[in-house]
Length: 316
Length: 213
Image 1 (spheres, chains in turn cyan, yellow):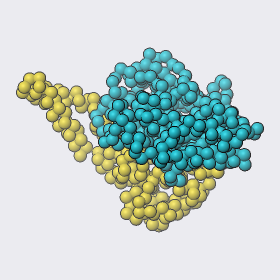
Image 2 (tube, one colour; image 1 turned 90 degrees about the vertical axis):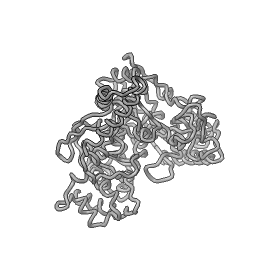
Image 3 (tube, one colour; image 1 turned 180 degrees about the vertical axis):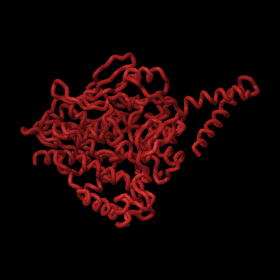
Image 4 (cartoon, helix red, strand yellow; image 1 turned 60 degrees about the vertical axis):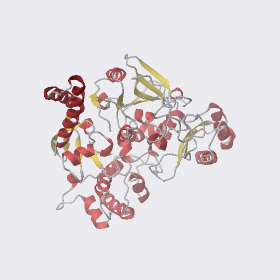
């Protein structure tokens, strides 16, 4: 691990200002992903800004009937919150499908959104990787791609976003609340939060330099049956090959988002609109622009079948 | 031992400072090197107080020191094990402010004033914690390397269940979780046992959970 300096931020605005001032600074909250990457020198921050003391660890009700989830709420606490279990079950289910008990106890809401890809070439500092070292090339192209993206990727990068929680957040139209280095705040709809790789795969999100997530807001509950189904190589503590989050209403309408298939949680209006026509119609629209490799083309079949199982479960 | 890391840093910074002053003035001055060393020490190291197994312990450490390395290398509590050092195996599991965590994936400097319970704080050879006794009774190990992590994890996991924290395999999110073998396996998936003593580990945890209920 490279040496770094360390500070405990006193306010969110101070943290953001400091992050913009010090070149190579990073926020640290749970640290479960950042420290893992620092040990491998995939991440080499020169300065860590500890945001754990900022008091952003509460879940509160909003005037419009939703929930405001502080950015430092631990994954365990978010999944176990009674209001989340009752009104946003797909979010509880998605969080519980990820990582281990120990990691969920430390990992935070904002940190989960901002975790980096688990593409093996991103982790291997001996290999070219445009996400880790811009301009060096993509080792996954022509390499081992079984786990990687089938849609939304580019010639420069076919990494997937690894989060389960983010898939549920996308499904629920969550909004990301931030503070910028000048102290100004803004709200970013989760649909606009992530960036597709294009030719800048090293930039995962639309956050600006120093911008700190302070909360993630959930709109008022949408009702319906909530399902999160994750398909992976092990029964527990593994990343998704494919995951499906769905809210299905009594009349057959609803919404669907997928994980494990794209550089960001994957959801399309056209696919949601096809819900009354059944799983095949939804999958066809959701994955219409897929460009799989020979090795991960199985994900298209797996995604369609998982979606079919999810809709059957929701109707049962 | 507590100072050995600090000495190493001093030496590294001294070498670094020596190299810098060598370019600047051809002969490195010891005073300049020491000054640079002190500045480097301020920026790259810290003193924190950890409350470990009920006792306050002050440690001076390099910022990079994980909680795991602080426990093992600075406080010489070697019951907590280093396996993968990446949060995947669970051998380093300790209870931090009441919750099980991977001590390898957090920095000691982030936990000034925190309460930490390690395997040494759960029980002693003459007064075993019920979970330790159950692991012995059910032969919940072979080589024993993962065992301290398994036991710390299991004790904190039962606390999570009693608080109503659901799991991936809980049939209902709103009813109290029942502690079936399936639930124990899922909730313990962050602790790997390469000897494969899983079925005996599940038996040991089941017994302790049963006696608590």
